[in-house]
Length: 132
Image 1: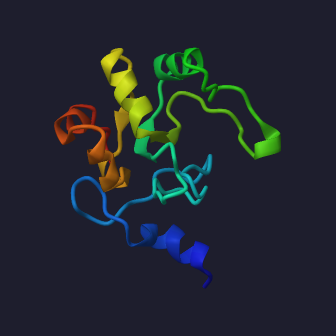
Image 2: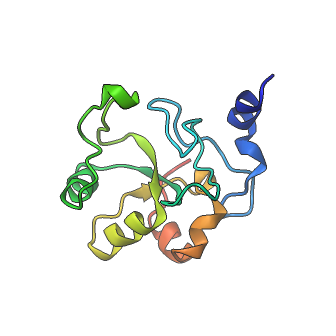
Protein backbone atom coordinates (compact mmCIF):
# COMPACT_ATOMS: atom_id res chain seq x y z
CA UNK A 1 0.00 0.00 0.00
CA UNK A 2 1.43 3.41 -0.95
CA UNK A 3 1.34 6.61 1.14
CA UNK A 4 -1.68 8.02 -0.69
CA UNK A 5 -3.67 4.82 -0.10
CA UNK A 6 -2.81 4.87 3.60
CA UNK A 7 -3.80 8.54 3.91
CA UNK A 8 -7.04 7.85 2.03
CA UNK A 9 -7.92 5.01 4.40
CA UNK A 10 -7.09 6.75 7.65
CA UNK A 11 -6.94 10.49 7.06
CA UNK A 12 -3.17 10.49 7.56
CA UNK A 13 -3.38 10.39 11.36
CA UNK A 14 -4.92 13.87 11.52
CA UNK A 15 -7.56 14.74 14.14
CA UNK A 16 -10.95 16.32 13.65
CA UNK A 17 -12.54 19.18 15.60
CA UNK A 18 -14.09 16.70 18.02
CA UNK A 19 -10.72 15.11 18.83
CA UNK A 20 -11.25 11.89 16.87
CA UNK A 21 -9.55 10.64 13.73
CA UNK A 22 -10.17 12.73 10.62
CA UNK A 23 -12.90 11.08 8.53
CA UNK A 24 -13.24 11.10 4.77
CA UNK A 25 -15.03 14.23 3.53
CA UNK A 26 -15.82 13.30 -0.06
CA UNK A 27 -14.33 10.91 -2.60
CA UNK A 28 -16.49 12.07 -5.53
CA UNK A 29 -15.76 14.76 -6.36
CA UNK A 30 -12.30 14.24 -4.91
CA UNK A 31 -11.66 17.07 -2.47
CA UNK A 32 -9.00 18.34 -0.11
CA UNK A 33 -5.69 20.08 -0.56
CA UNK A 34 -4.13 16.71 -1.44
CA UNK A 35 -7.20 15.65 -3.51
CA UNK A 36 -7.40 12.48 -1.43
CA UNK A 37 -10.90 13.09 -0.08
CA UNK A 38 -9.73 14.36 3.33
CA UNK A 39 -9.63 17.95 4.64
CA UNK A 40 -6.01 17.52 5.65
CA UNK A 41 -3.55 20.39 5.51
CA UNK A 42 0.15 21.19 5.30
CA UNK A 43 2.36 24.25 5.35
CA UNK A 44 1.88 24.60 1.57
CA UNK A 45 -1.90 24.88 2.01
CA UNK A 46 -2.07 28.65 2.24
CA UNK A 47 -5.88 28.57 2.04
CA UNK A 48 -6.16 26.10 4.94
CA UNK A 49 -8.76 23.83 3.25
CA UNK A 50 -9.88 22.16 6.48
CA UNK A 51 -13.66 22.51 6.80
CA UNK A 52 -15.71 19.67 5.32
CA UNK A 53 -18.83 21.40 4.06
CA UNK A 54 -21.95 20.13 2.37
CA UNK A 55 -22.31 22.94 -0.13
CA UNK A 56 -25.58 24.69 -0.91
CA UNK A 57 -26.71 26.74 -3.89
CA UNK A 58 -26.61 29.86 -1.70
CA UNK A 59 -23.04 29.17 -0.64
CA UNK A 60 -21.90 28.36 -4.19
CA UNK A 61 -23.34 31.65 -5.47
CA UNK A 62 -21.73 33.50 -2.54
CA UNK A 63 -18.35 31.91 -3.25
CA UNK A 64 -18.66 32.76 -6.94
CA UNK A 65 -19.44 36.38 -6.04
CA UNK A 66 -16.19 36.45 -4.04
CA UNK A 67 -14.14 35.28 -7.03
CA UNK A 68 -14.01 31.55 -6.27
CA UNK A 69 -16.19 29.83 -8.88
CA UNK A 70 -16.88 26.32 -7.63
CA UNK A 71 -19.83 25.88 -10.01
CA UNK A 72 -18.06 25.81 -13.36
CA UNK A 73 -16.38 22.54 -14.41
CA UNK A 74 -12.64 22.88 -15.04
CA UNK A 75 -11.61 19.66 -16.81
CA UNK A 76 -8.01 20.86 -17.10
CA UNK A 77 -7.84 20.61 -13.29
CA UNK A 78 -9.97 17.43 -13.12
CA UNK A 79 -12.67 19.52 -11.42
CA UNK A 80 -16.27 18.65 -12.33
CA UNK A 81 -17.87 21.71 -10.74
CA UNK A 82 -19.90 21.42 -7.55
CA UNK A 83 -23.62 21.04 -7.00
CA UNK A 84 -25.69 21.53 -3.87
CA UNK A 85 -25.21 18.51 -1.62
CA UNK A 86 -21.60 17.83 -2.63
CA UNK A 87 -18.99 17.55 0.09
CA UNK A 88 -16.01 19.88 -0.30
CA UNK A 89 -13.06 20.97 1.83
CA UNK A 90 -13.43 24.71 2.22
CA UNK A 91 -10.89 27.30 3.26
CA UNK A 92 -11.54 28.09 6.90
CA UNK A 93 -11.65 31.83 6.29
CA UNK A 94 -14.11 31.46 3.38
CA UNK A 95 -16.45 29.42 5.63
CA UNK A 96 -16.16 32.10 8.34
CA UNK A 97 -16.90 34.79 5.75
CA UNK A 98 -19.97 32.82 4.64
CA UNK A 99 -21.03 32.46 8.28
CA UNK A 100 -20.85 36.22 8.74
CA UNK A 101 -22.89 36.69 5.53
CA UNK A 102 -25.55 34.20 6.71
CA UNK A 103 -24.85 31.58 3.99
CA UNK A 104 -22.51 29.14 5.74
CA UNK A 105 -23.09 25.59 4.58
CA UNK A 106 -23.50 22.62 6.92
CA UNK A 107 -20.30 21.00 8.19
CA UNK A 108 -19.36 17.36 8.71
CA UNK A 109 -17.59 17.65 12.07
CA UNK A 110 -15.89 14.25 11.91
CA UNK A 111 -14.30 15.24 8.60
CA UNK A 112 -13.34 18.81 9.60
CA UNK A 113 -9.67 19.13 10.56
CA UNK A 114 -8.84 20.34 14.07
CA UNK A 115 -6.88 23.20 12.49
CA UNK A 116 -10.24 24.81 11.66
CA UNK A 117 -10.43 25.83 15.32
CA UNK A 118 -7.61 28.30 14.67
CA UNK A 119 -10.09 30.28 12.55
CA UNK A 120 -13.63 29.50 13.74
CA UNK A 121 -15.31 28.60 17.01
CA UNK A 122 -16.38 25.03 17.66
CA UNK A 123 -19.78 26.39 18.70
CA UNK A 124 -20.28 27.89 15.25
CA UNK A 125 -19.29 24.63 13.57
CA UNK A 126 -21.60 22.66 15.85
CA UNK A 127 -24.49 25.03 15.09
CA UNK A 128 -23.99 24.10 11.41
CA UNK A 129 -23.38 20.38 11.90
CA UNK A 130 -24.54 18.06 9.15
CA UNK A 131 -25.37 14.45 9.92
CA UNK A 132 -22.36 12.16 9.61
